Image (cartoon, rainbow, N blue to C red; front, side, top):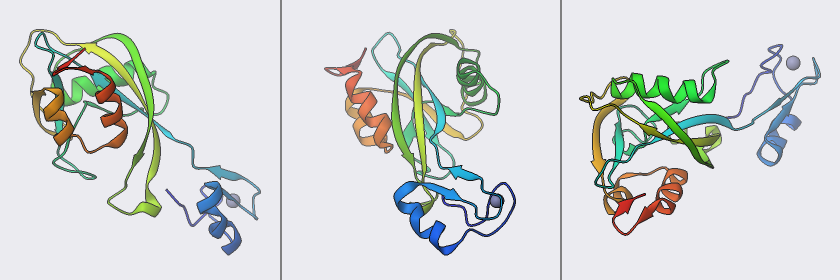
Amino acid sequence: MKAHYCLFCGTPYSEETLSSYEEHHKLDCHKCSRTWYNNPKPVVLAYIVNDEGKILLGKRGIEPLKGSWGMPGGFIEYGEEPYESILREIREELSVEGEVAEVLDSFHEFYDNLGDPTQRSSTTGVVFRCHLPKAPLRAADDVADLAWHTPSEVKQLVKFEGQKRFLSKRSSGDKFI
Ligand SMILES: [Zn+2]
């Protein structure tokens, strides 16, 4: 995401700074001398597989990619431990209390902000294998629906490239492992 004003002092960035952004992904302020780095934002994701080897996905109820499917999760909030973040997301999106079993993987993902490539964010996804209680799930927050899917279904439904790469690594035959 590209800013046009210094986020520290509010001064408009120079033409030179703005034109160098696409190459360096940082913005130097000539007034206060501070530099804003467009570092990746951390995202947590829950890998939840049932006894049949199907994975739990949520249908996005908001943009970007509204209507597509993905693992439950979201952005880590200020000061939050990553494992607390994924438990909060499970509570908010699935309406149950989950458990973290292990950290499985991490990957890079571009998060396209409403289809504008100049405003897309770089994110780092951290995937946790999570377990759920035997309780009814109810989609809530920014998730419109929940369903269990096989690897072949996931190929059609998931549009986020990083999640797709991770999920293809985690499948064996037509099951998730
Ligand atoms: Zn400044």
